[in-house]
Image (cartoon, rainbow, N blue to C red; front, side, top):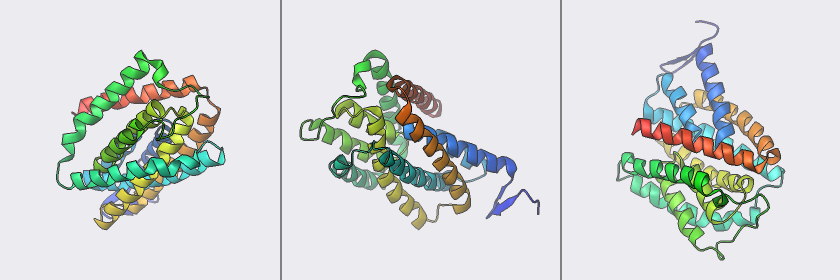
Length: 262
Protein backbone atom coordinates (compact mmCIF):
# COMPACT_ATOMS: atom_id res chain seq x y z
CA UNK A 1 0.00 0.00 0.00
CA UNK A 2 1.24 3.48 -0.89
CA UNK A 3 2.63 5.32 2.12
CA UNK A 4 0.47 8.35 1.28
CA UNK A 5 -2.80 6.46 0.82
CA UNK A 6 -5.33 5.80 3.59
CA UNK A 7 -8.00 3.21 2.84
CA UNK A 8 -11.43 4.03 4.29
CA UNK A 9 -13.91 1.36 3.29
CA UNK A 10 -14.15 1.55 -0.49
CA UNK A 11 -12.40 4.93 -0.56
CA UNK A 12 -8.71 5.63 -0.94
CA UNK A 13 -7.46 8.92 0.46
CA UNK A 14 -4.20 10.02 -1.12
CA UNK A 15 -2.26 13.22 -0.48
CA UNK A 16 -4.40 15.24 -2.92
CA UNK A 17 -7.63 14.02 -1.33
CA UNK A 18 -6.34 14.80 2.15
CA UNK A 19 -5.34 18.31 1.06
CA UNK A 20 -8.79 18.80 -0.50
CA UNK A 21 -10.44 17.81 2.80
CA UNK A 22 -8.19 20.08 4.85
CA UNK A 23 -8.35 23.14 2.58
CA UNK A 24 -12.12 22.95 2.04
CA UNK A 25 -12.60 22.41 5.79
CA UNK A 26 -10.55 25.49 6.72
CA UNK A 27 -12.45 27.64 4.19
CA UNK A 28 -15.82 26.29 5.35
CA UNK A 29 -15.04 26.89 9.01
CA UNK A 30 -13.99 30.46 8.23
CA UNK A 31 -16.95 31.49 6.07
CA UNK A 32 -19.60 29.60 8.08
CA UNK A 33 -18.61 31.47 11.21
CA UNK A 34 -18.66 34.89 9.52
CA UNK A 35 -21.61 34.40 7.17
CA UNK A 36 -22.69 30.97 5.92
CA UNK A 37 -22.61 28.71 2.88
CA UNK A 38 -19.46 26.78 3.79
CA UNK A 39 -21.00 23.50 2.65
CA UNK A 40 -20.66 24.61 -0.98
CA UNK A 41 -16.93 23.95 -0.45
CA UNK A 42 -17.05 20.80 1.69
CA UNK A 43 -19.83 18.78 0.03
CA UNK A 44 -18.18 18.79 -3.43
CA UNK A 45 -14.86 17.82 -1.82
CA UNK A 46 -16.49 14.84 -0.10
CA UNK A 47 -18.35 13.73 -3.22
CA UNK A 48 -15.15 13.99 -5.27
CA UNK A 49 -13.77 11.24 -3.01
CA UNK A 50 -16.49 8.97 -4.38
CA UNK A 51 -19.04 9.26 -1.57
CA UNK A 52 -22.73 9.00 -2.44
CA UNK A 53 -24.59 12.28 -1.89
CA UNK A 54 -26.38 11.06 1.24
CA UNK A 55 -23.15 9.81 2.86
CA UNK A 56 -21.36 13.04 1.90
CA UNK A 57 -24.21 14.99 3.50
CA UNK A 58 -23.98 12.93 6.68
CA UNK A 59 -20.17 13.06 6.81
CA UNK A 60 -20.29 16.84 6.32
CA UNK A 61 -22.29 17.14 9.57
CA UNK A 62 -19.22 16.05 11.56
CA UNK A 63 -17.51 19.24 10.50
CA UNK A 64 -20.65 21.33 11.05
CA UNK A 65 -20.89 20.01 14.61
CA UNK A 66 -17.20 20.52 15.45
CA UNK A 67 -17.00 23.99 13.96
CA UNK A 68 -20.16 25.04 15.82
CA UNK A 69 -18.70 23.91 19.15
CA UNK A 70 -15.42 25.73 18.42
CA UNK A 71 -17.18 28.90 17.25
CA UNK A 72 -19.51 29.13 20.26
CA UNK A 73 -16.54 28.61 22.59
CA UNK A 74 -14.45 31.18 20.73
CA UNK A 75 -17.11 33.91 20.66
CA UNK A 76 -17.85 33.29 24.34
CA UNK A 77 -14.17 33.61 25.27
CA UNK A 78 -14.10 36.99 23.51
CA UNK A 79 -17.25 38.16 25.32
CA UNK A 80 -19.30 38.32 22.11
CA UNK A 81 -21.92 35.69 22.99
CA UNK A 82 -25.15 37.10 24.43
CA UNK A 83 -25.69 34.18 26.79
CA UNK A 84 -28.87 35.62 28.31
CA UNK A 85 -30.52 35.50 24.85
CA UNK A 86 -29.69 31.86 24.09
CA UNK A 87 -32.72 30.15 25.66
CA UNK A 88 -35.36 32.63 24.34
CA UNK A 89 -33.87 32.36 20.85
CA UNK A 90 -33.52 28.58 20.92
CA UNK A 91 -37.14 27.89 21.94
CA UNK A 92 -38.84 28.97 18.67
CA UNK A 93 -35.85 27.81 16.64
CA UNK A 94 -35.88 24.28 18.07
CA UNK A 95 -39.67 24.02 17.75
CA UNK A 96 -39.33 25.02 14.11
CA UNK A 97 -36.48 22.55 13.64
CA UNK A 98 -38.58 19.68 14.98
CA UNK A 99 -41.44 20.67 12.68
CA UNK A 100 -39.04 20.88 9.74
CA UNK A 101 -37.63 17.43 10.51
CA UNK A 102 -41.15 15.96 10.49
CA UNK A 103 -41.97 17.71 7.20
CA UNK A 104 -38.70 16.46 5.72
CA UNK A 105 -39.71 12.88 6.41
CA UNK A 106 -42.69 13.29 4.09
CA UNK A 107 -41.63 15.79 1.43
CA UNK A 108 -38.68 15.85 -1.00
CA UNK A 109 -35.94 18.38 -0.27
CA UNK A 110 -36.31 19.99 -3.72
CA UNK A 111 -39.61 21.56 -2.67
CA UNK A 112 -37.77 24.01 -0.41
CA UNK A 113 -34.94 24.72 -2.86
CA UNK A 114 -36.76 27.80 -4.27
CA UNK A 115 -37.03 29.08 -0.69
CA UNK A 116 -33.25 29.02 -0.34
CA UNK A 117 -32.72 30.82 -3.65
CA UNK A 118 -35.37 33.44 -2.86
CA UNK A 119 -33.94 34.03 0.62
CA UNK A 120 -30.39 34.46 -0.68
CA UNK A 121 -31.44 36.86 -3.43
CA UNK A 122 -33.67 38.85 -1.07
CA UNK A 123 -30.92 39.20 1.55
CA UNK A 124 -28.39 40.25 -1.09
CA UNK A 125 -30.74 42.91 -2.45
CA UNK A 126 -31.52 44.19 1.04
CA UNK A 127 -27.81 44.53 1.89
CA UNK A 128 -27.21 46.44 -1.36
CA UNK A 129 -30.33 48.61 -1.44
CA UNK A 130 -30.92 49.17 2.27
CA UNK A 131 -27.62 49.10 4.20
CA UNK A 132 -29.41 50.15 7.42
CA UNK A 133 -31.05 46.70 7.47
CA UNK A 134 -27.76 45.43 8.94
CA UNK A 135 -27.46 47.04 12.40
CA UNK A 136 -24.55 49.23 13.41
CA UNK A 137 -21.88 47.83 15.70
CA UNK A 138 -23.13 49.56 18.87
CA UNK A 139 -26.87 49.34 18.23
CA UNK A 140 -28.82 47.95 21.21
CA UNK A 141 -30.48 44.63 20.27
CA UNK A 142 -34.16 43.97 20.85
CA UNK A 143 -35.65 41.17 22.92
CA UNK A 144 -38.35 38.86 21.57
CA UNK A 145 -40.80 40.64 23.87
CA UNK A 146 -39.95 43.97 22.24
CA UNK A 147 -39.98 42.49 18.73
CA UNK A 148 -42.40 39.51 18.56
CA UNK A 149 -41.80 39.23 14.82
CA UNK A 150 -38.44 37.73 15.78
CA UNK A 151 -40.26 34.66 17.11
CA UNK A 152 -41.79 34.01 13.69
CA UNK A 153 -38.47 34.55 11.92
CA UNK A 154 -36.63 32.19 14.28
CA UNK A 155 -39.37 29.57 13.86
CA UNK A 156 -39.00 29.84 10.07
CA UNK A 157 -35.22 29.54 10.39
CA UNK A 158 -35.66 26.42 12.53
CA UNK A 159 -38.25 25.02 10.12
CA UNK A 160 -35.89 25.46 7.20
CA UNK A 161 -32.87 24.22 9.16
CA UNK A 162 -34.71 21.11 10.26
CA UNK A 163 -35.78 20.47 6.69
CA UNK A 164 -32.66 21.04 4.64
CA UNK A 165 -29.89 22.84 6.67
CA UNK A 166 -28.06 24.34 3.65
CA UNK A 167 -28.18 28.13 3.83
CA UNK A 168 -29.90 28.26 7.20
CA UNK A 169 -27.17 30.57 8.53
CA UNK A 170 -28.35 33.36 6.25
CA UNK A 171 -31.95 33.03 7.50
CA UNK A 172 -30.70 33.10 11.08
CA UNK A 173 -28.70 36.26 10.37
CA UNK A 174 -31.82 37.81 8.85
CA UNK A 175 -33.70 37.04 12.07
CA UNK A 176 -30.95 37.96 14.54
CA UNK A 177 -29.45 40.99 12.78
CA UNK A 178 -32.25 42.22 10.55
CA UNK A 179 -35.13 41.77 13.02
CA UNK A 180 -33.62 41.66 16.52
CA UNK A 181 -30.84 44.12 15.62
CA UNK A 182 -27.81 42.23 16.93
CA UNK A 183 -24.59 43.46 15.33
CA UNK A 184 -22.99 40.99 12.94
CA UNK A 185 -20.46 39.63 15.43
CA UNK A 186 -23.07 38.85 18.11
CA UNK A 187 -25.57 37.68 15.50
CA UNK A 188 -23.00 35.22 14.17
CA UNK A 189 -22.25 34.03 17.72
CA UNK A 190 -25.93 33.29 18.38
CA UNK A 191 -26.27 31.81 14.90
CA UNK A 192 -23.56 29.29 15.73
CA UNK A 193 -25.44 28.29 18.91
CA UNK A 194 -28.49 27.52 16.78
CA UNK A 195 -26.33 25.74 14.22
CA UNK A 196 -24.87 23.62 17.01
CA UNK A 197 -28.38 22.47 17.96
CA UNK A 198 -29.25 21.70 14.32
CA UNK A 199 -25.92 19.99 13.80
CA UNK A 200 -26.21 17.77 16.86
CA UNK A 201 -29.67 16.52 15.93
CA UNK A 202 -28.76 16.04 12.26
CA UNK A 203 -25.50 14.24 13.03
CA UNK A 204 -27.31 11.86 15.39
CA UNK A 205 -29.81 11.02 12.65
CA UNK A 206 -27.10 10.35 10.07
CA UNK A 207 -25.12 8.22 12.55
CA UNK A 208 -28.19 6.09 13.29
CA UNK A 209 -28.72 5.66 9.54
CA UNK A 210 -25.03 4.68 9.11
CA UNK A 211 -24.38 7.53 6.67
CA UNK A 212 -21.22 8.96 8.26
CA UNK A 213 -17.65 8.11 7.23
CA UNK A 214 -15.77 9.07 10.35
CA UNK A 215 -12.16 9.35 9.17
CA UNK A 216 -12.80 11.83 6.32
CA UNK A 217 -15.38 13.59 8.51
CA UNK A 218 -12.98 14.04 11.41
CA UNK A 219 -10.12 15.14 9.14
CA UNK A 220 -12.36 17.80 7.63
CA UNK A 221 -13.84 18.60 11.05
CA UNK A 222 -10.43 19.34 12.57
CA UNK A 223 -9.68 21.57 9.58
CA UNK A 224 -12.95 23.49 10.12
CA UNK A 225 -11.86 24.21 13.71
CA UNK A 226 -8.72 25.87 12.33
CA UNK A 227 -10.93 27.98 10.06
CA UNK A 228 -13.20 28.86 12.99
CA UNK A 229 -10.29 29.99 15.17
CA UNK A 230 -9.05 32.23 12.38
CA UNK A 231 -12.52 33.64 11.69
CA UNK A 232 -13.39 34.39 15.33
CA UNK A 233 -10.16 36.32 15.78
CA UNK A 234 -10.84 38.12 12.52
CA UNK A 235 -14.48 38.89 13.41
CA UNK A 236 -13.80 40.44 16.82
CA UNK A 237 -11.13 42.74 15.35
CA UNK A 238 -12.54 43.51 11.89
CA UNK A 239 -14.39 46.67 10.89
CA UNK A 240 -18.17 46.30 10.80
CA UNK A 241 -18.20 47.28 7.12
CA UNK A 242 -15.73 44.48 6.34
CA UNK A 243 -18.02 41.88 7.91
CA UNK A 244 -20.94 43.28 5.93
CA UNK A 245 -19.01 42.91 2.66
CA UNK A 246 -18.08 39.32 3.53
CA UNK A 247 -21.75 38.57 4.23
CA UNK A 248 -22.69 40.17 0.91
CA UNK A 249 -20.00 38.24 -0.95
CA UNK A 250 -21.04 34.88 0.47
CA UNK A 251 -24.70 35.67 -0.24
CA UNK A 252 -23.82 36.28 -3.89
CA UNK A 253 -21.74 33.11 -4.11
CA UNK A 254 -24.49 30.97 -2.58
CA UNK A 255 -27.09 32.61 -4.87
CA UNK A 256 -25.03 31.73 -7.94
CA UNK A 257 -24.33 28.19 -6.72
CA UNK A 258 -28.02 27.60 -5.93
CA UNK A 259 -29.14 28.97 -9.32
CA UNK A 260 -26.61 26.83 -11.19
CA UNK A 261 -27.87 23.71 -9.39
CA UNK A 262 -31.56 24.63 -9.78
